[in-house]
Image (tube, rainbow, N blue to C red; front, side, top):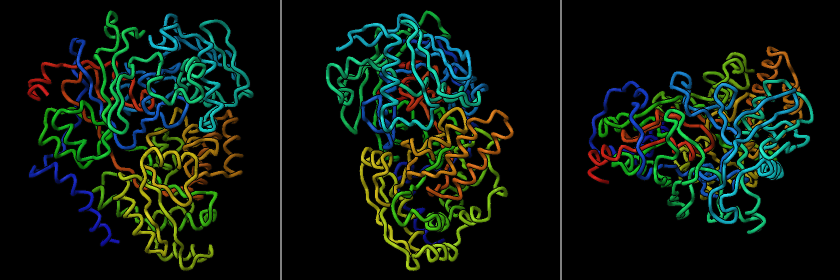
Length: 577
């Protein structure tokens, strides 16, 4: 295995070396403090960087629509105005402490089965056909939520069962759940899924352009701060500011948002190209940059601002739970065991990562310390799975009826090639011949969300914790009604315990039930949870009104309304670029 690691490290570093040139390593610095409070100014175009995992689909009711949050909005939003101290984790998990009103001005829970949202008055859709700037009403919210729930890819497992949605008046909408569950779940489910996850769009788009009308970017029309102006698939999206946008800056109450004249979303799948663009000032922010660029960036561009955060998201390799040989738990366990997780942390990430068992598990529950399972709490088989045992892995395969291994394929994107090649080598050591099938991001996401891939699928787009509660996180990745259940994991025992936990009011009992679920999914191994590296957010010094937040909502394409650009500073640094 050491030979594999030695071979793999140069592959990872070649691209980085091209950008680093002859830069000497700098001492690892302390994170930059929050942004200086400068007086806001209007004007300029924000150049926002997105990676190859960005999918430029446009239907706000589909799971693959990354541009949607620039155009459309939901009832609630992450509280952008929290200080660094108040939001030390940078990413917002939606709960009562971090959520803020967006299209909804206020809300209440009069009983355990009911949520009432009061809409802001005077919020209007963008002034373009087919709505031409009409006012948003509760009927729009009802129609949008019902359309979301009707979609097979809506992620119903994150939600309580909704009995009915009632429009009380033009600005009030009421959600009724079929049954009462523990208050924590109900609050987090409504605030974190329905209210913050469901985008609101006008039904006139369907009435005018048909059921697929939302798929055309030219038909995108919401209440958001940005209006789609130009679009080149796989290259960039240019948005202009919405001159009729409703929101004002809470820190400068007379200032209408957004500050910038527009936003250019630049899609850059390649890390080296992305780093070069950051260095030369072609992009204003690089979100979730890899740890290994830190020393080089601070050597070449000491003026850059940054924040670091421990990765809480997985980069799983899903195994299709419905197809042989992955229907056999022993096969799945053997493939997890074939990977040398500790060697990857040590030799690839130089210690800047953690395995799925470190720091509590599953590691996308990192935001919920009470619910994490420590290593010594797992059964021996789970500990063995992450200890790299080739002989034991071969034994499990033989017991499952595959003494000579088997052949399969791993569906990947170009950005997954390096790590997937390493995985392929590890699997070969236990007799599994894996062919790497490269496709584009949209095709991969579709295949993974629909579980239509035949064998395995490398998935680099599982982000930080998925919501405001352990129930939401576990449901997102392991509930069969959710598209992010990448493997199609569907286990009756899981569902029984999950339902029991949601209905349990005693906190200690509920914690134990969720920990039991975490142990079960780790033992059932529907995915190979690869080590997760630390990440960094970098931004240019001319970006003001920003201290490193992300996770206000999916893909962060709304939060840029708060930024203003010091164009004089930019010119002095870039020479006018």
